[in-house]
Length: 448
Image (cartoon, rainbow, N blue to C red; front, side):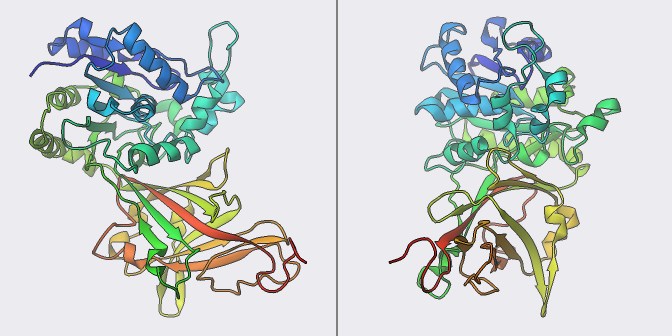
């Protein structure tokens, strides 16, 4: 099979030199030096966005790498490099057929829990731009914003390629064949004290690496007593193929690049030779077996990204979401769900939940409920959703607080999409009504 040129895209705060060991490995496996193109992009400049980098990448492909606008190529990306190539893929039509193989090494598909730390002064000190010039000591605020957990950038990007109308990552040659790897170990020594993150390789979470994403819509604007109430719980269509995570034993976010060992290069080399749906399936089966023992050493984790909006699509910034089970007349809260929560700084309607599934005993759940508490912070307007356990009519002098419970047990039964699924990121869109108060009689916002 003729080999394609390979583009190598590094992660945040790195440069082309990060792929030095991989270039040596690929050359040893028969790839000509002229076929390997390791790019460098600016990630430590505060005004540059990931979309800017994707545009610069496209121009550099043509002018410096010498690849024409329709020439096929493969890509091996590390960490933030996955967001760069996905932003490039979704910018214009026709690029999916051009990119033939996409290999993700510890990809930051949904960001990193360390990103918001990098925006602090300490982050600028240890990760900032150290080259004298106008950008000296900048940490790349806009890139880090896109990398932050539950960022608006990764939410919107997922709706373009993972949840859009067309297939971006399928099992045929019409779209790139995708292969995802991540180390099953974190950092050791002093760095562990700074970057300690369970369920991760020290920088990216295992659950966030794969492209296997689902979206659940909980629409409390629909009255359960009226026609169409069955759509209160919707599962967004997903048109991509299953691309499981392949864990590499003993590797962390850094050593997966600098010391990949023997197994990973063999798997990557085989991945780059895949040219049909049958060969893709065969590679997944073989790679799953070769990495089985590595996976057995890992706890099962899942990430949830929740966004609350009103019926106009505007964000609901002040809310709380809880999961619970019902046994007879009592409720049992699932406290493990909200142990590790991050609120996106740029929009508090976006929240990220990281859950160790073994703590939930999720395989034996017979029912599941979600409770929502929302507040407008005003006596004039409030949030409202059908299914409230309390009166939806806000009393005089209230601050617009409202709570409701919704039965989502259909998501834990033996059919359909599962609410809990290891090594995935699940997007949850919560929809509420925003109404002038009180809800009956004369309202306090407009009257005659």
